[in-house]
Image (cartoon, rainbow, N blue to C red):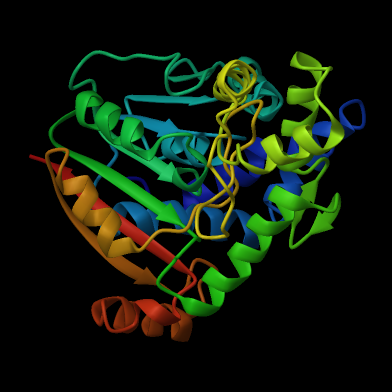
Length: 335
């Protein structure tokens, strides 16, 4: 594996032309929105150290390996893995605008071993056992179906391959769980606006009302509102089925938001910040043919030696420390 400091310098050099391109301000704005320190060498060291730390925790050397980033977004982790010497780096994400920067990097620098595509989990496929490592960084909490992701991970990873999950939605932390449920409430019931780093453009309940009103304009305002309240967590096809049943039989659906489950965008099926008990997630992963272990994570990617030392000690004390950690890691080996 190449030296960490040299990879960080290459990351810095790779992204500077984009960050200072006056013709494409949107690319720099997008990058710095997610990675605010990418325009400094220290920031590039932080983001590079983050990927090195994940590989070290998984005891995975990416040199010469085939890797897949599920929900790769802007693709910084894929670019770092490319510079770390992977044979092939693949990624996909359902949002085309997120991929533009990475696709530009690939084209401008002829990164032929780095391949990305716009797709959801059901729209992409790879041969069985195609990859040595699958990465899910801050993505598993947004997958429409965690179960389907794990099925596909089991298919795509070779025996002995590694699944690395890093996420900041530790449901075992009571304070974090409370804050996340407040975000759920805002997305489900509004009002619109910015809240805790998120933007609510329209509440999911209002979106369901619009769907119901369009397919059944003869229903009263009260009927539409009640059906919208009772179709929480449903996507548009299921909502339309529920409305048809209601009109045919008078049967009302009973999927009501209680604040205990993450709400669902009725148009896209996307979810906002699921919560996970890391140990329950590890047990769930093992049911798909893995050996899995969860860890509390407290930071250290910025390089502060005291923070890194404390993080190693607190990770070693998992599960005792999990309730105080904002983030977690799950490392799973395909068996």
